[in-house]
Length: 425
Image (cartoon, rainbow, N blue to C red; front, side):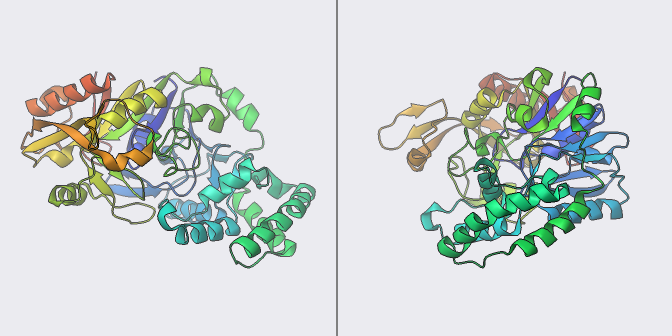
């Protein structure tokens, strides 16, 4: 296997963890390069379900280096909970490494996130209220705390002297929230230092150099359409899930990346606010949601569901740098007589047809999907392990998607388990 980035090609929740888990078997190092505990990944292995939020799903394999990279933001309490659950499940976490350059989500980030979401009115984003956005805001405002600060009392003290006056003024004057004392935050940081101590890799440069000739797997969270630059702004996450984000969030430069696999469902889902042209608010959408178990791993929220959108996927291939696609949950359509694919958007105001993705999300309320219809296959495909044994209509559907997207489908998932995967030559 070549050095590979796994990215979400839609709005997240596409089944990246399963694909990452499968590819991790052939990798030596797995690096999660962006996002925080707002991500939710589910892996079913040996009939056991594991839920991940921040820790790379490759941790299920022994003798793999799993790193949480510098582009991530880490909420200490959530990290501790996830670690403890894995240990209780008998998972060996001794090879987990954390970059000392990763940012820390503090309690006030979560408070600000919750307040902002509750009082945004029409500007509501639909965040998970995990403090991710405010953590990234402070990172780029250069008033954030990094993991390495926890182990340097002098640096921590000096940073808090800069951060607290600014943050307390913001908390009190803007949000009407309680301020923090330096003593309180210092004590919290001492607790955080103990949580992270077994995993912080201060020798991360030596580690990456040591493994630069090995096989690297870069794991992203969320999806291309949630990218802070290329997504449906402002209804996006606060980091760069695209393939290029792996180079800034992992510690390895772009020359280390050979392939970018974009994970996509055979339909589309979205959690939170924002435009969604193919959304189905009818019994068909309900059917997809129920069969596909489309409820958020992190929040439990029901996901919005819709037909496959080739317009956003062509866009994802371009800006995400995709070299191939892993298509998941095609088995959800086993009982469907007809399957629709959106090939363009039509502007209801003037009839204009869009075959390229319009990035101005404020016109999306005027757009309606232009569909083509495909015949279903009407049989259970969850036990099929070879591409040639798929029903003819399923193969026609896959071939049409490849034609529309001008990108090969390399992996087809026909169920949640590791074994329910077809590697397409």
